[in-house]
Amino acid sequence: MTLTGRTRTLFLTSTALMTAVLCLMGPLSVPIGPVPVSLTNLAIYLLLYVLDAKRGTIAYLLYMLLGLMGLPVFSGFSGGPGKLLGPTGGYILGFLPMTFLIGLVIERFREKRLVCVLFMELFTWIPYLFGTAWLSRQAGMSFSAALAVGVLPFLAVDLIKMGIAALAGPVLYHRLGQLRESSL
Image (tube, rainbow, N blue to C red):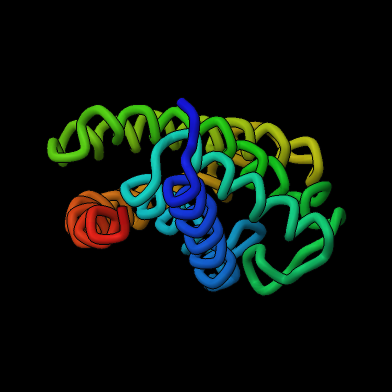
């Protein structure tokens, strides 16, 4: 697909805008142990309704790069290479394939909220498992102990975030669709 001037501008600005939303929501967290409750995954789920899988993945990559460069965009207003190499770095890295896969599902089933939530739950296990393995290694704990502190406390809250995204996402998509149509 070749992008025309207006389409390219819309592509770039919408991707940048959703990267900014991720940078604003990502640092907001509640520390409850080695892994905080964060709004990062809610922001990812929402941006995937607004963007497609490709632009959503680009937005998440930009977010990761900004955090890697030291901007305080990760949970608890942290950033830098130490965050990616620290105990929660596996979750941050695991969000990347999750973002692309959930984006593909939302592109196809945007209006089927239950389908989207089911696949969000399924693909959220990518950062859960990758992050648990990373936390286990970094913190010198067993995989089951890392799972107990890094995943189990978050299952219900993450399911609520998925529900919020499934309810708000299609509305955002349609509202912003009206803007897309008026600008083209």
